[in-house]
Every structure is written in C-alpha cells, then in structure tokens.
Image 1 (cartoon, rainbow, N blue to C red):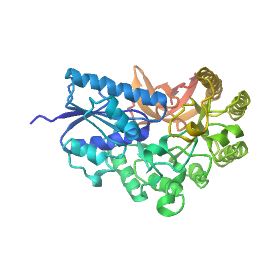
Image 2 (image 1 turned 90 degrees about the vertical axis):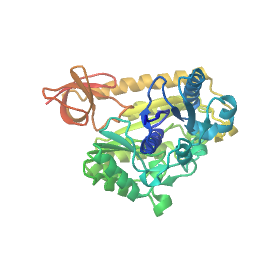
Image 3 (image 1 turned 45 degrees about the vertical axis):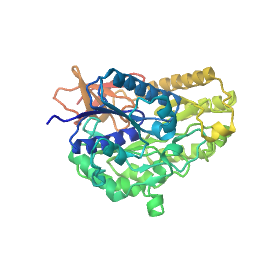
Image 4 (image 1 turned 60 degrees about the vertical axis):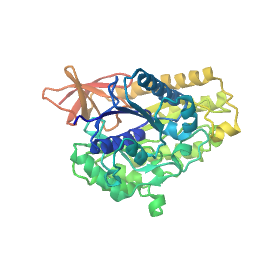
Length: 431
C-alpha cells in the first residue's frame, strides 16, 4: 500500500520549527511519508505552520497560504491545513478570507491536527521529533508562553502565559537528540528567564542547563533568549565554569532611552541595563552578547534614537539585529499610542543602526585575525568547509569559511586559525 505524502511548511521562528518537528514525528508514526519545507505539488496534504508576530511575518504566512490555496484549486495538492500563531490569532478572519483551506488549527491543536490526518496522537512521544536542522544541532524548547507585557508585543495573545516543561522531560528529550547525533543544543523559549518559576517556585534555568550538559554526546549548549529585567544571575557562573555552555548570551534589549523603555513597558532603565552588561562581561570573560533593537516605537524622538545609537557605539555588541516597529492590534501600544513615527523614518533608523553594527562587526572580526578558534563544521561548499565558533548561533550569526588538509563532515570539530575577516564572516585554515 502506497503511503500518503504530507509536506509540513514552517514559517517564523525556531519555536515554530520545534512544533513542526513534533508533528512530523507523529505523522510519520501514523504511516505518512513526511517531508519538510518541500517545493512543488504532488502531496496528499500540506500543513502550513504560520507566524503571526509582526506585519512582514504575517504577510509571508498569508502569501504562503494563498500560494497553496491556488495549488489546491489547480489540483496540484490534496488537502490544505493551516496551524500556528497566525491561525491562533486570526482564525475566524482567515476562514472567511481564504475558504480554500480545509481546516484551520490554533498553535496548540497538535492532537486535533493529527486526528484530522487520521493519525493516533501519542503524547508519550512528544519529546521525540523528526529533526529538520542539520543533524548535529537542534533546538530544545523549554517553555511556552510569556508573562511579560511589553507594549509592542502580540506574542502573549497567541501563546498565553508562561508554562515551563519539567526538567525530567527536557533531559529525556536532550538524551533523545544526542542519540541521534546532535552535538549542539540551542535552548529556546520566548523568555528563558522565567523557566521553572511556575513549576518549582523559583528560576531553575541554571539547574536545567547543568543537567543537560551531563547528557553524553552534547558538546555545546547555547541560550536564546534572556531578558534584562528579572535576569537570572545564577546562570552566569554556569556560563563561566561549565565548559559545554557557550559564552554566548542572546539578550533582546529593544532600546536604551528611558522614555522609550517606559512606554515599551520593559520594566528596566538605561542605568540598570548598562550595569547588567558590565556585570555579564565581568562574570563571563570573553562572552559574546547578541541583542535586538526596535526603532520607531510610538513617541521615539530623534534624541531617543541618538541615545540608542551612541549606546551601540559605546557597547560594541558582538551581534545585533534591528527591527522597525510594527503597530500590532491588540497590543498595549496599539491601544495607547498613535503610530506616529513615519515608516520611512523607521526604515532609515534601522538601516543606520545596521550600517553602524556592520562596521563594529568588521572591527571585532579583524581583531580575531591570527587567533585560533574551536569550530563546528556545518557543511562543505566546494573545496571549503563552513562552520561556526562558540560565539555564533546558526542562521542568525556569522560563519567561518576554512580549508582543511583532512576530510571533515558536518558535526566534526576543528581548530581553525583565522587569516582573514569580513563584516560578519571569518576565513582561515584548520591547524
């Protein structure tokens, strides 16, 4: 009997990717032939796991739904299903606007999604996933939801309040991943800082990281994302002393001007932010700090922007991303403020900060010429290998392009001497 084929398409963040991997495993257990992010038709079913974060991400998800709705109308695919954040947030509107979709599901309707495809849902296998990343690294999602009330963010409306997974389940999942060749685990959540408070009465992030580090086969552990307010300070000694924990901190600051931080409801001041960064650098020597900034928030003045710009010049972040503000219905900012910064000003400010960071990144990279780094191999391109240092996360950070006299495969480690540098990438040779 020929297996039916299903294509699961993931939009948005790595947290969505984990959900898709769980679904793929459930469907494969149910005797479907599964593929991820495939192109073209010929599928008995297509499932689109959507993102509903900001305008651009929502539009990408809508465009993908429309493309496959057209494919279904042409007869190129069978059933079409939509799940995830966009569907959670706008299900009734989507049902009206794009009726070609056979059924819409919310973000947490995994069981209903499986049953729609005539598959028995097995919650006991929820820790098992069909890994879609290169097999040597994988994401470990430790919680759902968020207890923050940041003025610009719609995520809590879609995900609900923070809900931690138990340490036992997470260590079990880490062991499962390690047995399948995963060497680098990226611990993710909307907010790592709250991990364990709902289950154990206090933050247990440090305990969890140490427990995962004891899993045989795991070599690197990386943390995404820790917020500056209610920061779990006990993670810093773990980053400093545990050799498996990368000295890499992803801490989205969003802004530094106090008037903007207050309107954003970030519950932190510039002085507190600067003190935290200073402490992190003292406690974890050599740490790479990645952050994101949001420009064009309602009421952001030129003075506020210049303060942010000077802060970036002074701090010299290792990694930095910038987003123009998106006025999202249902958020505090949408209800309280006019979207009063013109779109062209938002874009210009974002571009100015990225150009500034590009120069900072080049200077920091040039300082690495002549140094040696432990590098994990991601892939081979032509005669060169492409990998990352401990200070680089996949997809979002720089890479190391290097030569090697010996043959290497993805997941291998090499010591690379840096011989050249560009804005975001390094070049070298294995030694």
